[in-house]
Length: 489
Image (cartoon, rainbow, N blue to C red):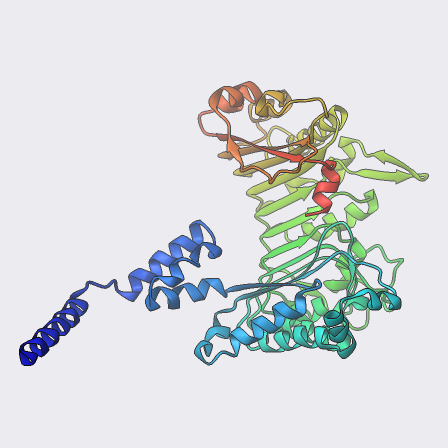
């Protein structure tokens, strides 16, 4: 009896093993394609459930889950840093550090704290503060991530209050930042909302000559007595060998011309070589500056007229300062400085504007139409794609009615008929509508409007056979004004 029972048990085990081996499995290449498609269409965070399916899915998901790391330097940064160290040093995660491609360091808004405030902290945080472990955990994770083949490095301070990087971090942390900026594998460097920045973080990264993209958004450099501040011309030190940069994309919003010249070796200096940009094809800048500043920045842009294919302009109808009075510069002065016909290779143009009244909307539209108008009928713009993004602050008593509140734009509608665009194939008109609400709501998704609204706003463009016209709107409900909303992002 026991012999038969033993035979039955062995038979069942054999059949289970046979069925397990006969279970069909997907090749690893197919699994990788599935995971790559989910990560590209949705987000990397959506891969967390997929990583629990099997070991094959888990190995493929880790490449995306740990490809981008963000560390926020708030009150819990030491705990997050220590947890990250424990994950990377786990014996089962030996190769996990090699999957990291992007590192983003986020600084919270600066907060004044006196030396007596430490006694108001909890006992545990007071011990960490006095022993210096808060800084050590963050520094340790930085030193660990230096082993990763990073391609993107970002230092970002939350908008509203730029951060003084020189006072926020110590010398060892600054040296770690410098090591990230000069990694041979680095292709993209982004710095935003920082002031008193050590410019060598940028200049040394440029000299390594591996950067393909550089973004300097609302950045100011520390004082440098070596630079001639009264010089208005593009100059450089001829004794230093020039740097032939590989940068293809440059973003310099809210950066003064003097600081731009210092970084790229166009100011009088004995220590900065001239940086040539023969591969530059995309440029983004803010026109919110004085007239003489805009002239210098535009002269810098025209240097790449033969290669620049994409241009993005923010705050086109800016405000100048005359006798301590803020006056809006007329549209004809804008055209006198920003002459798009000088950019012979330009094929894609994006204009970003913000308006908080009907008068502002009218002036912005006037400036945009003057900029896009052809100098002569025989000299049209050769752009193929045009995007105009306008953020409008609606009145408090208005109801969110979407595109019904957007007025027609007949001046822009007439430009294709006047010969302004002979090669234009795509025109996108995007409106962000800001409404006051006591309860803030997450911004909605962009919505493509129907034929009736497109025909009402730009009737001739809508009927043009060779222009694809898209009208997109998005509603944002916030208890703050539009400017405060953008500063808080």
